[in-house]
Length: 65
Image (cartoon, rainbow, N blue to C red; front, top):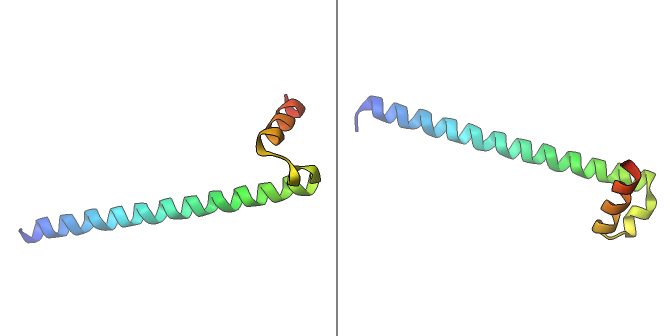
């Protein structure tokens, strides 16, 4: 393997690692957002806490459509 091929392979791996870090960062941001939105929902609609997810979805759809 030539020096140029090694450098190209290293650059490719660095890019893949950076993309993997970005995916993890995006996933963590989404998880945080979903948790915060769920907390807001429970705060303004306390009945949501004990409600089945399908029932909650139905109630929200009825209310917002």
